Image (cartoon, rainbow, N blue to C red; front, side, top):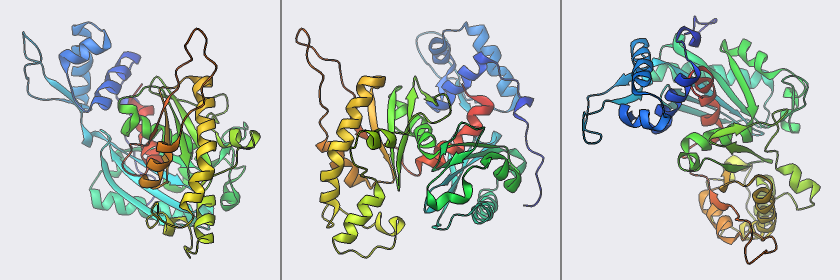
Length: 378
């Protein structure tokens, strides 16, 4: 691929507020009967039929053969046509860069990942361009129908436009407008979020969010952050930094049991892992240093989860990021949330603490879905 392709214009498919609700419901369900869609949205059947026919005519939605949905007339099943468009999502972390290609229905068409401890802008942009070209070639998607690029990066927003500040490993990305830089480099409209926020979006559509509408997502990587999902939508806050939960650990002097700390403890235990990417696939609960990390992590995560429970009242607190599943399960099993004093024999309910249910890279998945959301979903 070279130059800037003539992309599909999302505005070429008119999407009203009601249409976004309809498409969002179809997307989240994967497929839903027209009758069930009418009941779910609370709209008149002729309105739903009119909206559907418009999107079917545009090629965005397919209506499958009618089936019996309930007594009476059989109902057709509406689905997003996966081939209508595609989207790319990048994760730019302290030590690794990844790219995911999604179809319009949220199906993964391909993924790429590379360790990158020296993640300068030019090096990351060149790698993403290479990944993009490989994924487009392998998948056979029309590059003109890529809606855009979503990005989740380990950095926080400064409040000055789209400028962000990252850790030392991402110093080259600090205090620049990241979206325009990557848009120029890849020739695609670009949306940028903090990596924890992007991970929360991924969790909301591909993980816990399939059954839980309100949750706090704790994103564990070299650093620590997260995101807040309220009524199924990402809550960004005034400047886009809602979910920077590492700050709560810092101001509360709760320690900072992130994955860099886990790597240090595992190395103290005698392992010679070069970096996180080398360590994470290899460690188990029996690896020297893991038990020490859990001893440090449990009180910090329990206190934070309780604070979030009383502050934002989520149904769940989800521990995600790059922590191996077995270690995450052990962490969750040991967390008991402190309770507020009882009144009349009752205390406010606390959230359920659970492990992420996303299969794959939640940050890249969440980033990839953002251009689709911007174009079509609620």
